Image (tube, rainbow, N blue to C red; front, side, top):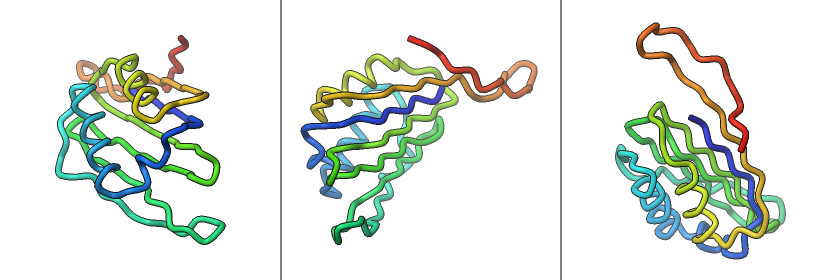
Length: 128
């Protein structure tokens, strides 16, 4: 499954500090029942306007969680990709509650490989 969320948030500042961003990603991982493989890797990138903005990746046993905040726009882009099924509603609720999501666009795709046939699955959007 691949959950993609593009969201405008009222609490984007939570993601701007390395310590709170790391804690938030590990909490999301726990909420959806995934297994972190180490700590989030966080890298600051220059953002137009002069400020450095952190982007982060948490490798999980099942794949990865990636977060890209854009504070000047109160926006965040989040990808949760997992070979293991997870409760997308719980993930969305956690993201909405902790970041104060004002509006969002959500995409959910079925991805991966059929473990019995070993054939790749077609990229299939799952609609709400």
